Length: 611
Image (cartoon, rainbow, N blue to C red; front, side):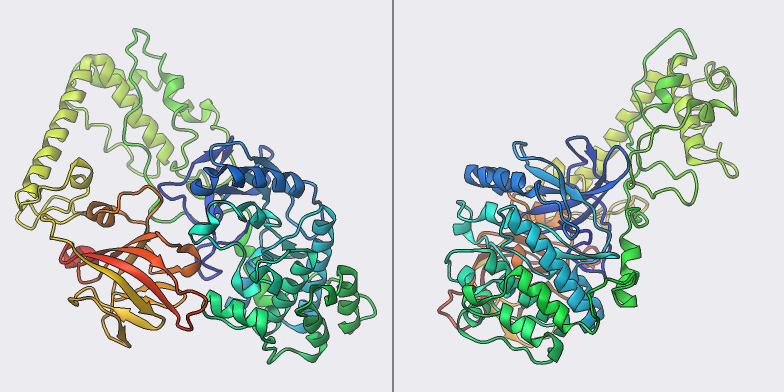
């Protein structure tokens, strides 16, 4: 569980919640998305006392597997016993929930993977302190009867006072479940031990091998057994020696002993700490206040518990007006008016230093007197003005003339609506709603005149206004006025470094082509304004889905793809494709490629819309 997103320090550290993300988990209000991995998604939340926590929610397909649930519960119980200086403790969990979850202390620091990717290899003294901290963490983890199984740079966080090891033991929960036969990889190939890669017994010595790989990566910036396809890396781990080019001499004995093929020959945790001590220039390993390079330490400030500024796409407050309850007592609605709006995140912050919209720990509603203090009888004035003449409902709109806060404006609008309802304006309000609905229906009918007979209300609601329609109407992401015929291409073997273009017929891989739409290299990439979307389990793999989804990405790594995964591709030229992953090459195949099926709808989007 990480305090940084998968995208690394170059991306947004605190990502807004996506459409399919929960808003709360067992009473924890989720403030931001921290990242996602093979096991599930990680979110930022807070304890009732305001301490930040990272909550991992397990993927639905794992949650539906009975054996996974049993092992997950067992591993969580064991993990809760781990209380070390260099681990992120598990503080809460529910393994019986519909979507199992666990919460750990939030660590405000980049992962080792992010730090090396952004700033390069670490100095020798930093690596020694890093290895010593991880070794102490393993000592506590192994003492609780747990083997980490997935120790890698992404599971080591760099905090101001030392490293933190996370996600210990969780990989075992997925091992040998019914999902492992369908493309799910347990552990990360580049940091596996030989016995793990060969399917033999996994012991504490397996984590020592992984620690040697982590140390080599931290010091050189590259995995000890190289990169490439999973089967190629695993072959080298089992049969070849590591490439330690560029490894400083002071680290060579430590790393080479950890990377011994024989588990029995690897050093123990106690031996590792002695090796770190021997390689240090000091008489004793002492962690200074600034143990990280300056550039890496600076990244910690961007991962503090207060989230980054809210994105411009933060959704507005709900458009549905509050329920109007007729009452003869005009002052009665005062309390319900303020209460529904106080907790809503989109309400503007009271001061520049307050947490941005949609983020931060739960904040109690502001005292009622702050809302009503400017006018001792706030409801009376609007009623006196609007009750005799219902038609002038828009009158409150010009109210915010100078610097009135959004909360005051919102209160004024709600008060006007309530006053209008008491004066008998409810009927007119619903007539206006019906009129709006009629206009929307007419807009849909207009867009359907192009011959689109296959879109339903869900698709029509997002359609872009046809060029022949009123140009004053706003446009938005939309499906086309007419659905083109799909063309399917089966079992395309796309080699690493090759690309395909949806404009080609038939679609086939090309080497170093220009204007490509899709390429493969340890993942799938789009180009020329193209956008990828990884569909969730259960989503309809249709043109409508592919044209209305907005969870865009330009690159999706291979570790997120399994056999049967489906992706949508919107090309910059307006073509749309459904990509179905059929598999990866067997270990006996020396080639690096991905096999996929393509269903292409050419000209499905306006070029303007696709750009």
